[in-house]
Image 1 (cartoon, rainbow, N blue to C red):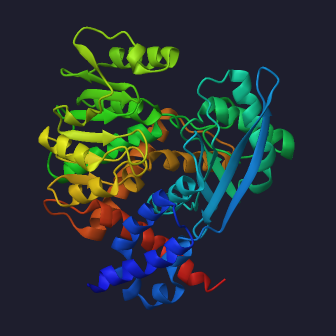
Image 2: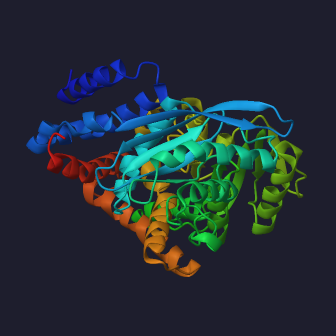
Length: 447
C-alpha cells in the first residue's frame, strides 16, 4: 500500500466513525483527502495542526424544528439545519437549500466543499451550508412565505454579517431570500448584510442571479484558452433547468457556442442545431408555468426525450448543472462516446465516485465545482462588501469582477499543478484551497 493511500485510509476510518452512513459527506472528504494529505504530511505545521481532520468536523451543526401553517389551516412540521463548517479565513458563508433530499449528510458535504471553494475565490469567507427538507414545489406563494418566516424565526439566532451570512441555493431564490430577510430584519430590528442574494432594491448585488452560470462559462473559457481554443462553435450539453443551467446556457449562446441540451427530472430537451436566446427564454417561461419540460411546447427542430439524460447527445463539452451524483460512470462513457472532451461542474459534486474515477482515467479535461461554479459565492462576497460600504456596483462592473475572479481561480490552479496537455484541475483546486485554509488553521494553534 502506498504512503498516500495509507494516509487516506487512516483519515477516512476516523471520519467514518463519526459520520457512518453519511455517504455524500464521506465522498466529498475522500475526494479532497486523496489530493491534500501528502501536502499536509510534508509541512510540519500543517501536520501538527491536523488541518484536514479539523475541517472534516464542523464547528457546529444546528438542528431545529420548523412548524408552519398551510393554506388549509393545518400545522405542518419540517426540520431545519445550519452547518457551520469552518470560519478559519472569514465568517461562515454558504447557501440555504429547501428540498426533500436535504439531510445532515448533504449539508455537511456542501459545507465542506464550500470551505475550499470560498478559499479559492481569494475572498475572506469561511464555509457553511443550511436548509430544510421542506418542498416548495406545489406550495402557494403564501405557504412559502409562511415557511420562510418560520424558518428564520429560529435561524436568526445563529447568523449575522460578521458571523454567518447565508445565501440562496436549490429551492431558495430571490423571492425566498426576500421573505427570509424581511423576517430577519423584523426579529433583529437591524438592516444589515446578514444574507446575500437579496433583491437590488434592498441591498442586493447586480448579477447575483446570473453569477454561477456566467462564472461557469468564464471558467470553461479559461480551460479552453489554456489549450489555445475558444468557446465559439463548441457544442455544449447542459443538464438541469434551474438558475445555473439556464444562465450558463445564456452566456454560452452569447459567446457563440452551440447549446444542444437542457434537462429536468422528466427528460431532456435536445436542439441538434442549438438553442437561441428566444428559444431559451420560451423554455424557461413555459417550464415555470407548466412545472416540467415534458409539458412544454417545443419549437421546430427541438425535441424532447422523455426520461433521458443529456449525456449521449453529440457534444464537445458537458456541463452537469442539476444536482449531486447525477452523472454516473455509464453517463461518462456515453458522454465520451458522444465526443465530450471537457467536463466542468455547474452543480456541487454532480459526478459519482465511479464517474470521477472514469474521467480521471480518461483524456477528458475536468473541472470540479469548487473551482468552476464559484461564481455565485464570489458575487455574494461582493454583495457583502457593497452592504458594508453602503454602495452599489453596476452590472458591467460586477460582471467584470466576476470574470476576473474566475480567471484568478484558473491561474491559481495552473500555478499549483502547471499547464501541459491536461492540467489536473481537481488536484489543483483541492490543494490550492487547502493551502489557504491550512495557513490560517495552523497559525491559530490548537484552540
